[in-house]
Image 1 (spheres, one colour):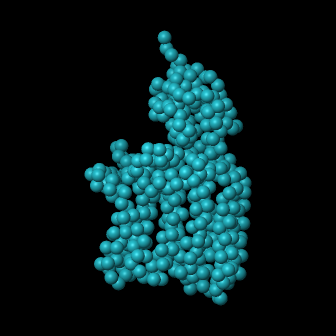
Image 2: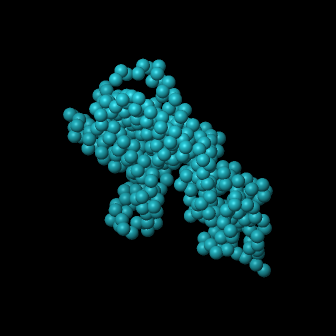
Image 3: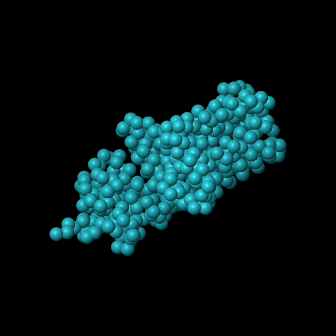
Length: 422
């Protein structure tokens, strides 16, 4: 097959870029997953910005054992800070900017795959990255795993540069990215191990390869390593404790959580395309083009309908606009102090998203105290607050209901006042 010229190649890449954005733009705020993890990372990013204090650790992983936590790298907080700053601290703006960043990643992905495999494989991978529903869902919202996923094309690009030029600097960049990407989520350790074994087997100068890999990965993980040195290797000790007591470790979601396979699936697709290099080269161009067009329209149809709830919503009939609506109602009451918020719509009863809004807008309240607040806002379905065991609401007694608002046909916002006992 004759290679396409540079002008046509540029036009096609720009088309992919805009189609990537288009397919994710429909009902963006209704699909948007901005829940506990995002809100807590945003709060930490806001603290870094306001207090001008850097941190060496990032979000904790979901698994816990006897109160022990395992922390990931701080790069998640710093990238949250970047997107939130650019988005004027608005979650929708920040998330949309992240989605545009994910779209920009098609360029390094295309040129990297083109160098490592061939032109046809590059367009096939672009179509999968851009239109595969699984990848569409995870390139619409900010998170540590989604940030890691959208940076994988840069690893592919620098890997292709290394195999094209075989320079130490390119190999060092690949090694550094392996460490840096591990900061986002420890699922990446499996990929790091795979790269490590592959390079040690296939590179001629194994000693030099080994030391550059170690140096690059170490520098990529530097903040976490500094934290470990300063805190008696807390994460390492915790990881060992987890492994020794794996059956007793609290693992919300188990190993079936979809995002655990994001980066792994990316490299699985890459491996399949790499092994199918000769077969792909023989595929008719028209077949590839028609398949990509059909794939796009199939995915487009999946995203045209307005969803009843956000992607991976922690509660039925709940989405980001409901969070925003609840917060605007709270603001309009005029309360400035001595109140708190509880959310019974899902497991995060402390209403992390609304807490982010309150902290962002500089409300001076005790965000963790549910024992001494005079007022309490509660998000609940059909008076679920009457039977809840959540201490934030259950211990707010005696109380009286001041007002309630309908957020939608399923959830209400209630305002209670604590009655002082004589």
